[in-house]
Length: 503
Ligand code: HEC
Image (cartoon, rainbow, N blue to C red; front, top):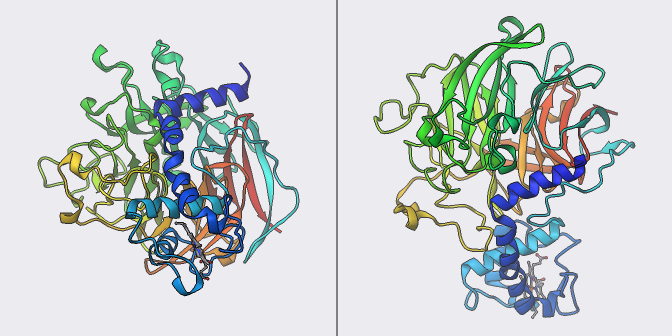
């Protein structure tokens, strides 16, 4: 099988494991049918406008273009100008579906158009943005279709994880090494069964990160889906996030230590797709990891402090328990939990200037978020989300779980990215190559294949710009000591690493 076919197979298998495609087909109607029924007579079948109503795509919207703004005008109308109010005839969920539908059509990307197979060409001409112009330089090509993370070594080489392979080094010349012997791998073969492993999305390599004092201590941290290969038979074909650290000495992974590992009863057969898997360090000797929904369903256990899923965990960098963690004194809770109620936390970064921890999180349909992570707080999944479930129903698993979102304190996202671009990893920029971007978030996305700049001041979104539009699925973003920004691009014909260099 060639690489493209393999990449597509892996991805579609994983997606179908989640039955998302099926739900999408079933749900199409719930989003487009109410539009065709109530709106197309004035705004046109394709939203391009008629003499009775303005175009809703390809133009700015006078009443605002967020889902909240669009919902408001649908509910309240603009009676004197000919837009009816729908509050009395359509219920809130349908209004929200319509607003997400309009926003998705405006953005030109659709739920489940994963863009894994679209042709990829790196633009040769400079890209001009509000504050800086830059060129994209290709650093490495021909990587696996499903890479996950890069970490820039001080000597200019890079550590690379590929989900189905393992850990390797990309040299200055862009050549990828063979797998580092001794390090955990994402190979299917290790498990010896055709029904589990990579094809079911289990046991993937996730983030690789250098300890802040790497130059002196040499520690490399690696998060991956542990397949519990040493476990008893009952747990074969299960997986769960695990964090280890080790050193690379003479090309070999050595001195491995386990920093965080879940109880084996928390290992599941759920795909590592939503497992999060990122690593961040603060300036005070702690390491944080994101663990997304990995329970038996995408909502089980996320609100349960005894379960590791849907949490950000915080440890001392040697794996010991910080005495000041928020739930450390609660006997029924896991002491490592820092925050909870997370769905699919794809990015995790510490801001060394403000001392704050930030995350990006993939929501359902609509509802991608940027969150400021404060000790002990609940970020709401699966009780509330600004998005809707893939099948168009509201997010409210509270009833099923016997929990009410009204009686619980839920932290709201700082930035609500709807329609969902499928946010991935990000950095908080501090380099000198792009001085205008100091402290701004540079955020990648998968489905939207775009790179965003997000400016947040005092906990409020100030500005958002699309820096690169329609490039490729951006899995990871990193910056080197000079402030050049590296993007890890996922592609079925072979993934790449490109570098943004100021013009
Ligand atoms: C009878 C014709 C008519 C129908 C039906 C109608 N609209 Fe409108 N719509 C208008 C007009 C006219 C405006 C411009 C209002 C204004 O300028 O104040 C408008 C404005 C809007 C706007 C704001 C555009 C902007 O620039 O901010 C949105 C969004 C919108 N409509 C969505 C919808 C949706 C969704 C539906 C179906 C639920 C719908 N409309 C049904 C006529 C209509």
